[in-house]
Image 1 (tube, rainbow, N blue to C red):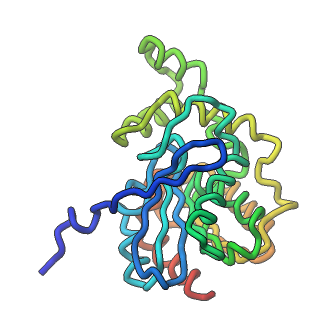
Image 2 (tube, helix red, strand yellow; image 1 turned 135 degrees about the vertical axis):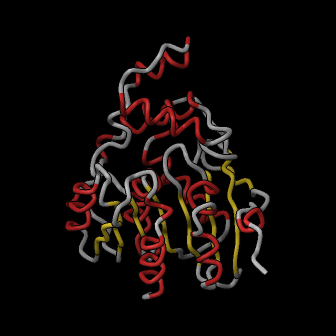
Length: 266
């Protein structure tokens, strides 16, 4: 008998982790508690459920015998959503991930991130070295994330509903409003904080040295930047996900299966 979809996508109760500046993050666990750990970190305006559960990643990894730990990044999902841009630098978001691993007493974990989660993953892999023996970075840009967002138009939209005319900004707002519980003001703060992190944009000269699988949709505007980052990393390979753009690549079976094969090589 087929398992109902509602059962396959049901979320466990979140476990709260308080990070360095007192922000509470929601984390979720599945799978074999004695299995190798895979840490899942979602993209902008998404969540652990949206990015990894509804797309079949958790189900696949659980069947393969992994212990899965997923995080709602600050400003997302069931985590706290501060409105202070200073709390959303790349360094802070990467430090949040380290705090989660420390809280769960995890010595080593495979890292699997998409979009914003992949950008954070580049920093986590650099910071933690051998603690992250392998990483999968999907849809990672080689510049400042959310750089095309028109912050002033978003501010006016939040303040009084002024219509947004900029195309990419419209898309970001639609993405934000698609996921229940998203806080547009918090995500605006995130965009501002990420721009303040320009000094540590991905630097090919300091690429992660562990094995990394870069994967980006063939129709994604960031694909050439992702490819450049892959070329700079000494133990990297690049997967072009056929027929996928930035927002539907996580649902690709090709992507899932390639990532699983890559992790199982360890």
